[in-house]
Length: 382
Image (cartoon, one colour):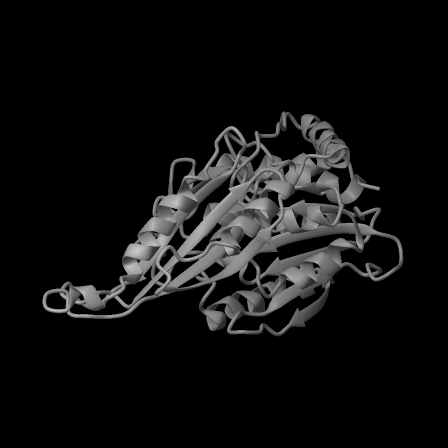
């Protein structure tokens, strides 16, 4: 395949059309049937280019996981694993009311455009175009599309790790950052739930008989959030809190959910032990804490930088000067593959803006250059 041929054959209009087809199938993580409608569509797309499809039924209410393997990808030598997620954070109906699918100048709007259906489509489309133009990957290629990444990949993570161990390289189609930059390192993350159970009482006539779960949780929140240390790269956020039954009742129950981010795995493990070891300030209040590390950090390694340099050299051939951004606090399935010791390059999806927002969009002008980089990665990595 010549670069001239790639330039002549790749069509921005076709890429836009394909992305719109994918975002038109709304697939919030918690709607398994909707996610499976997306899986049905991808199955047809994969089979159309000769990928051998392996569909794994979801568990615990999640949608199905789909893998598409290029013929010969089951052979012993390690290959390229392409990881994408097809779930979004947006409820069904967002494509009409919250963020209608539309084109305004260079911007294509719609739920899940930027995070990350455009990137998932670019990778598939690049493989399809490579075959159409007579090219072939040097390494076995497996596409793996995840149904619940936005919820931390609780079901898929075991399959992700399994596939990563078979791979020489992992390419992740999460969106580009900071003006088109790819991602070579991410913070790790942990999630915790804390439940306090006190003793209810009338807040007027029997106040002294009560033991407030909310009061206990308030003290715990202040303690936990005091552990945030920006210089160390350690943060805590109490993002959800529920409790109480009435303003005149000493609250018996209170629950919080805590998000924790960290740069170094050792820090995450230290803070995990510290949080799980917390005890109630009030001996009459029962405290229950669950959770732990959900994604280890994606640490920048020599192998990751070497993979980036290959991608940058390929992109420079068609005028795209690929760069990488600084460490990002958001997690992805790339954290899981990097933790297996496999060189992982993340943020290879479309450039755009507004992940998880109602103004989410991609820059149409980013599609063709990034698709060309994908074609070269799939064809030349060895």
